[in-house]
Length: 65
Image 1 (cartoon, helix red, strand yellow):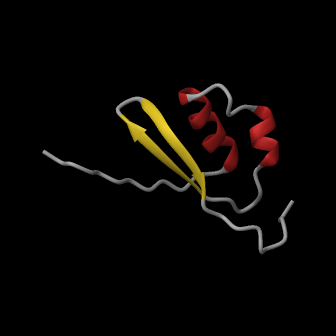
Image 2: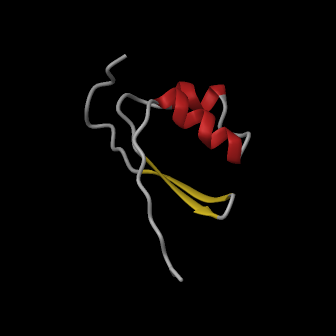
């Protein structure tokens, strides 16, 4: 049995927001509009529950939009 299992996934902001929204409806259009390109988030999941979200990207690079 694993005590701690970590996964990493790279995706586009649209898909990331849709996935996060499936866990928590607070992550919708406004959240998507606040993301930068690139952006990195750490999601802490427990089963099918999102226990935490941490933004890891630091805005020291100009937004590509």
